[in-house]
Length: 85
Image 1 (cartoon, rainbow, N blue to C red):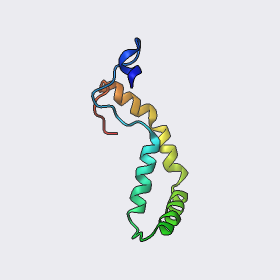
Image 2: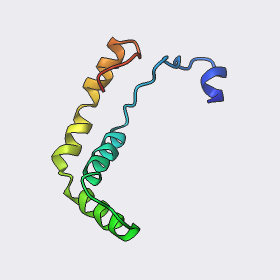
Image 3: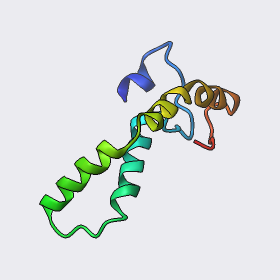
Image 4: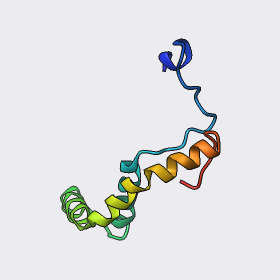
């Protein structure tokens, strides 16, 4: 963080920095899927994590990656403020 505030020629930090990392949306999807189960122990959690992870379709991840240009345009349009993403 020191660099953000002390080094010249850096981009200013927007007041509300949106989360553009597609993996965060993937983790959220995994969490939604896991919450549908009644998990009672660590072994069951591990098993369900692997099952649900493997059940996420490539189409879902592809959609996240291909949405990045649109997300970036939206952030530029809103000058770094809140977007629907």
